[in-house]
Length: 111
Length: 114
Image 1: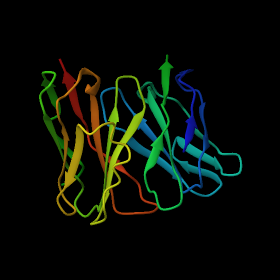
Image 2: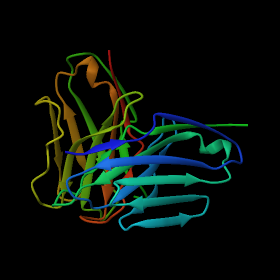
Image 3: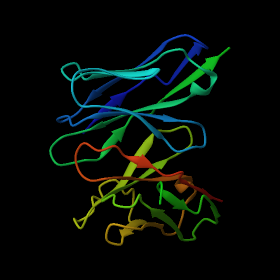
Image 4: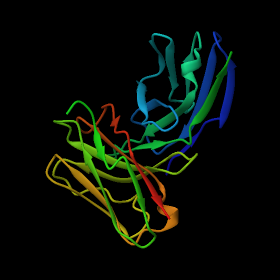
C-alpha cells in the first residue's frame, strides 16, 4: 500500500515564502504530483517530479528526494489567491498508473 | 472538448434512489479515473479505465457502485440505493495514457443524499 503525509493546515503572510512538505511510503515509485484545489473547485495541476531535484515554474517550485521519500512545494511571493488546498499525489511503479492522494494541506494567506 | 466535462454539476437525491454521473474526458485521452472527495477529506480512488483493458475497480467501496466506459470516450458512474454517506463530490480525470502523464480533472459532480 501507500502512505502519504502532509500537514493539515498552514498559514502565511502575503508576500512571504511558504514550503509545504510531503512524505510518502510506496512500493516502488513512478512520479509525484502537486495539485492546487480552491474551495468548491476541481484540482488543477501544478507540478510533476519523477527525478530527484528542484523543478521551478514561476512562483512555484517542487523538490523531490526519492531516497528520502520526500517532496516539498515552495510558493514564493505569496498572494491572497494562493489560499487553497495543496494536494500531494504519488504514483507507484509496477504497472499501476493510479495516483494516490494525500489529504491535502490547507494554506491560508493573510494580509 | 477543451477539458474534462462532468454532469450533473449538482445532484440532490433521496436516500435509496439510484444516481448516474457522467464524464466526458479530454478528446484523445485513453486513461480515465474516478475519485470521490468527501467534505474536508482527500481524494479517494474509485475506478480506472485504460483503453480497452479491463478496468481497475479496486477502489469501489461497495457493490452499489459501478462504472462503465464506452471505448475511449464517455464514462458513467452509477450508485445504486444511495446512502447518506455517499454524499461527496465525484471527480473524473483523464490523461493521455499510461505512464508519466499529467492527469486533468473535471469540475466534479456534487452529490447530496437526503
